[in-house]
Length: 311
Figure 1 (cartoon, rainbow, N blue to C red):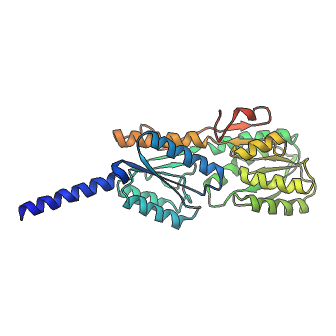
Figure 2 (tube, helix red, strand yellow):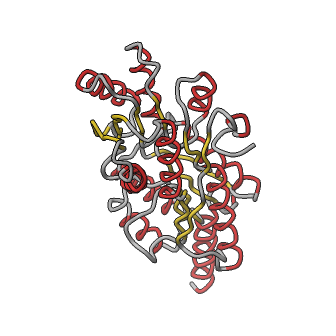
Figure 3 (cartoon, rainbow, N blue to C red):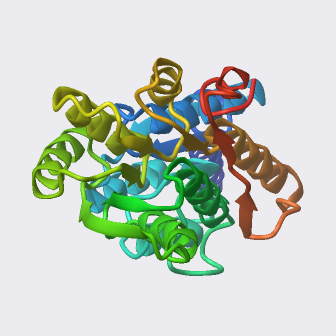
């Protein structure tokens, strides 16, 4: 009887250890981001998974498609499979708090990238681009390109996304100081190129004297630029935010005048490095909230940048 109990206990220990290490007996890192249809999210997932693999971890990569329920399911899977850590670009500042807290309760630290959650002390780290600083940079360049006067439109990101709120606040910190710059139209296109195209068509019909468009991200900037090009309005100034490869090409082609590059790949690698340090020493060695500065990209310096990073 005693021998059978010991064998059972030993088997349980082996099973628990295997679960904690993930598949293949290696410690594992789960990378969860929005859809890879957006090159920004693909670049951070690729950078995080490559760095984790280089450090010896098995890696799973999944997308939540900005669906908090799907994100919860992916967290449940990561917990059940015994992930050592989670790298997350979350599906909502409020909606993601419970999932991150659940992982923490299971002993799995979550390292957030790109988007913060509305809670402190739940995630092991929240590493984001300095969206406010980047928005100020973009707005300063937009004002300069506009000659500090004229009617302009703004395309906003998804209202539930903290980054959308921070960026528009940074834009208006600059633009509202110029009395001759007039905000003629402002609508959300939900980070979507298709929506931005449609919204831009409507805005242009209602405001034919538009001189410029400032967008909350590059995807919407591309949609706006396409609508303006279709309407024969290549004279309208378009400025974006993200630094996507497609917008770098559009800047070279003269369709978009500037963007603000977020160092997505660098942030993703930083998160993995901090997760590794946390798992090996018990501390990431960094504060929870971390902000990484953005860079302005213009026709003059565009060739210095690659996939969401300076070359």
